[in-house]
Image 1 (cartoon, helix red, strand yellow):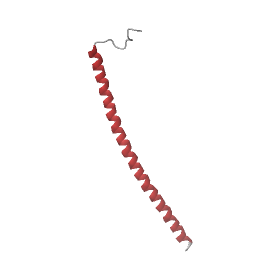
Image 2 (image 1 turned 135 degrees about the vertical axis):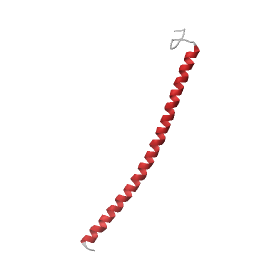
Image 3 (image 1 turned 120 degrees about the vertical axis):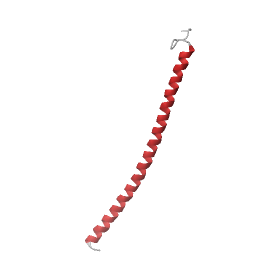
Image 4 (image 1 turned 180 degrees about the vertical axis):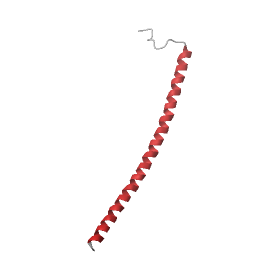
Length: 75
């Protein structure tokens, strides 16, 4: 094999290795993106639930007629 042919073979091997790495990285990026999207949806749902529960708690406290945040009588 000539020097040029060896260089071309080496370059082809390097390009193949880089293409393989890029393919794996693309797959990893897509997987991470899907995971992050699912997490944000869950965070959004949980945020709405906490807000709803906060509103329900305020309604329950205002309808109870009991004084708010006072220590019990035995203190």
